Amino acid sequence: MRETYGSVLPGMNLEDLSGKLIVIEGTDGVGRSTQVNLLKPWLEQQGRAVLDTGMTRSDLAGKGIKQAKEGHILGRLTLSVFYATDFVDRLEKQIVPALRAGFVVLTDRYIYSLMARAIVRGVDPEWLRHVYSFALKPDAMFYLRINVDDLIPRVVFSRGFDYWESGMDLHPGEDMYESFRRYQTALLGQLDKLAEEYHFTVIDAGPEVPVVFGQLKEGISRVLAGQPPVSAPTAPDRKPAPRAEPPAETVPEGGDRASAHAFAKASGGDAAT
Amino acid sequence: MKRYGDHRFPGKLFVVEGIDGSGKSTQLALLHQWLQGEGYGTVFSEWNSSLLVRDTTKRGKKRRMLTPASFSLIHATDFADRIEHNIIPLLKAGAVVLCDRYIYTAFARDVVRGMDPQWVRELYSFAVKPTVAFYFRIPLDVALNRLRSGRNGVKFYEAGMDLELSANPEDSFEIFQGRIMEEYEKIVPEFELTAVDATLPIEVQQSQMRQIVLAKLAQAKRLRVAP
Image (cartoon, rainbow over all chains, first blue to last red; front, side):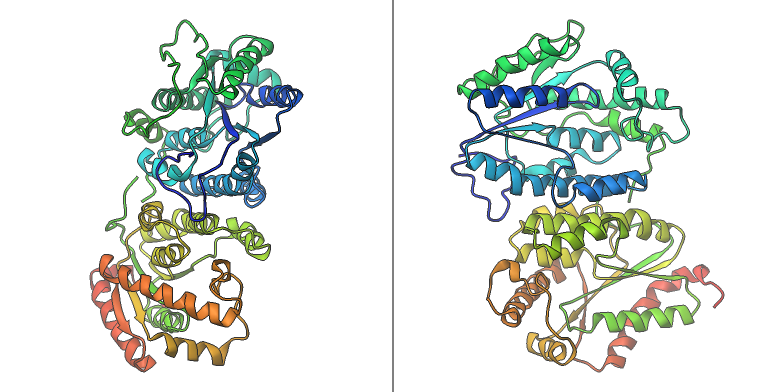
């Protein structure tokens, strides 16, 4: 039987969810969707049915979130709960039915990115864990890890700086480059922390696309064969040594969140209540 | 992030709760008028009224896409937007804020729909604790009688039709309202709501309300604005 991170939604049967839930995590511009676009045909080639899904792709709330973000008027709590609405709709209407039908579900980000982005904006981590406690535990989480110096040229030379990806809601008036650097540094810090807590399989996103793709294929093949995802070598300057064990057996508690709060404070993020 | 608790803003927050037909909106409208007449800067905020999520909620309801969980979260989004952009800034500015329905409505409805009571309470833990929350207590049949004479037809989610309690919307509505009332009765002691006997004449209820509100406004005299 499949497990959740604590609570079970009404009417959700956790039996017979025989498909595989595979999460690709990583920050903005790291190449997640490029990889998902390569992985899907690769899996289909092997005769696997694949559902790919990602943030703001729900039938219910996807459009609403995009519209609201255009106006730059979303409060940080509102943004969090709106994303949770989008997530729950996709979980109930897309992910769970696909898992029941035996699909491989490739999800471009999961609750972890949502939590990291909210924590950086000063939202209480315990509250977020509680709200998302209904989420299914995935079969594997692959974290495309990059440091901010390698990330910046990728973003600049592909799509340019985006308002939200640069955390401009946190540092209004600052130039996009400075804001991007500060925001992404804080975000990567949170993702690294979550990577450790939830036992992500870390993949160095620094090398060329085919190299990263090769590592993902290897890891996913193992997961589909019922084995734990093998750990890829991490960047030499980074510490979190990923463990080669089944992902997320327990709900981690606690963690140091002083830095996130300090960040939100320093950037003028005002407490909501 | 501060947890549900007493706020220190100069403004005051009064909310009304109760099942449909309890007369809470009538009472709040009378209170609103009176407070304005008395010269208090008064603002009214209604449940489920955020423009930001209106299209999403409408879409979900119209196409009956909502599950208990997405119903709960979309309403929480609406509330979060009103809290962040409306209620808290107004309380900071010293206004008297009046809310027709508050988080207790979600506690009652979402739990009847099968959501975990603790999960829903935690979801809304960012809410500001009201200065006074009035609960209009009324026997179910009295409320239903009032509604029968007034409206024509109940909506799908309003009647709790998503719970498949009955194929008949009227019957479903009655069962649903009864269950909501049972939840309210648990909420009243838990969150110390001020119960008002909603079978009393309207003017008697109103005078009780005004007395309680006035006592809370005594310390807030400086908030008066020229009428």
